[in-house]
Image (cartoon, rainbow over all chains, first blue to last red; front, side, top):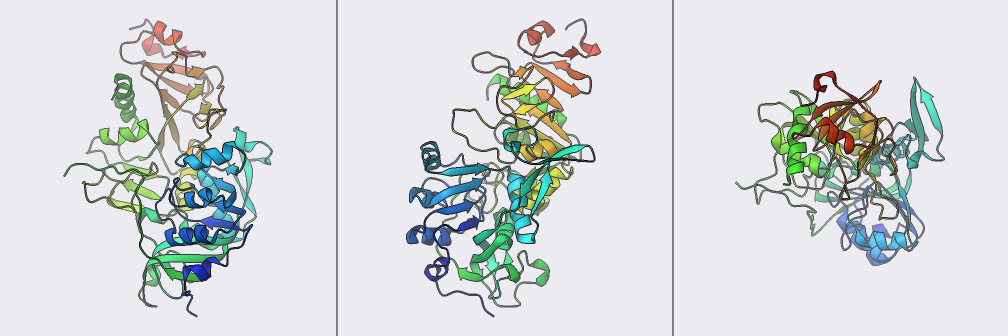
Length: 231
Length: 217
């Protein structure tokens, strides 16, 4: 029953041209670095990528943009990536901007078998145009559809061979949601631990959501904005 | 820090009351965190999945796995909690966050907010702003009273695409504090020695004046 896969190369071959992939991370925090690098290497094309951000020009999902592997991006904030701007303005890249909470809930709904939901976020704004409006108990909501992925790429701190995952601090972000919403979820971890080592009370993503597990290497964990104080 | 920023931040911090859960937007609002009196027991919420942001880390102790919504390295204060993004926004939409303080580009006299895009310029995205203005129990907008060209940012109607309609409770600028009530927009405070006359000149919206201010200052 072990889900430990042989290599990133083999696992990432499961992603095909034209697939929709959901990728965990917030900014560069908690991104599946090894899987993205491998996907860039394999050059899989015409991808729809669902992720809160799109990396920076030379790291994270920015690597896929550079290679022009992404046809469509569903995200809430893409301001950190200059390549994005270029490709968006010259029409190479289709973009669906989604409020962050709506994006998180759309992915959650996808993983939970819910077709969609009503949210107040965006009512009265350009993103509500063309969407079903509904009044519930005197408040207006818009309908937002769930998102499912052909695949999901997630990054956790610890994982066991069954695929139970534990995240560290704010690197959890979208990862558990992505894990559940991916039909084929590939998880990479910093530490591969023995079965039974993770206290069941402490599992963040239960193994059922993970199809393949890999031990990641050489994590760069880049910091976008280093802010410190003097000791 | 420019004078106007300091005036705005010093006034905005007074919105934060003992025991509140507060979400601060990126940019100028984040700078309010440093001004919150240490004796106040406040929990700062961060959209990326954290309740209880602490100080910036001591140099050398930064942790790439611990950032705020502005992607800055932070610390967790004792009693903090981490969670995923769906849960983070359930807290927001569910009305569990007492107060949010966000930046603004334009605010209308009916409390509409525009702060996420300028057509014709690069669209960066709204991030969590549209969810937050709908869900936080109190929405306070901080911004300079006029733009670089000296034009009013508080207007009858917003010209820029909206972030939320009728969502603002209060706007704090370097000149004034306005509140949005069922009876319309009310001037509550004149800041930095500005006269009601000069506030009127620099505000392109209809408002009434709090009785305590009548007679000018």
